[in-house]
Amino acid sequence: MNRIAVLSAVAAFTLSIATAFAADKAPSVAHGRALFMNSGCKNCHGTQGQGSGSAPKLAPNPMPAESIAQFIRGTKGRMPPYSAKVLSDGDVADIAAYLASFPPAKSPDAIPALKDLKP
Image 1 (spheres, rainbow, N blue to C red):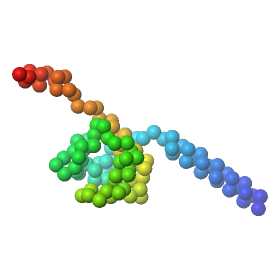
Image 2 (tube, one colour; image 1 turned 180 degrees about the vertical axis):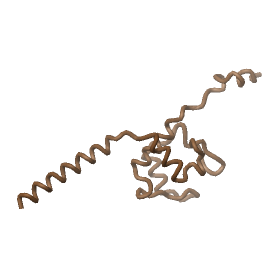
Image 3 (cartoon, rainbow, N blue to C red; image 1 turned 90 degrees about the horizontal axis):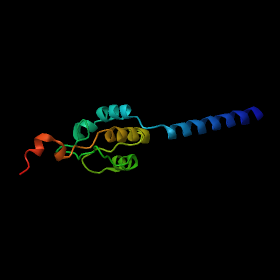
Image 4 (cartoon, rainbow, N blue to C red; image 1 turned 60 degrees about the vertical axis):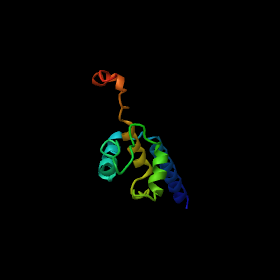
């Protein structure tokens, strides 16, 4: 009986350490890119989240990962829903990191060829 209590305590401690480690894990841009490319996101949103005629622009300033997760899990529009079994919260955080990795577009004034077009 005592042995079972010790094993249960060790298991609970190990689980708490693993949970804390997972919560502290920084989102992975590389993993997010792989998910974005392989989960169907790129087919409508473009390879860099630039949007298309059938789907909105997602990058370079994506919604927070929590908002993305809430939307993709409850969408009722043309986009299919993605449950947590398909894309976990960690996966969504990685996708958000990938979308946030793109720099914002340059100002037209910063592009010499466009500067010359001003009246």
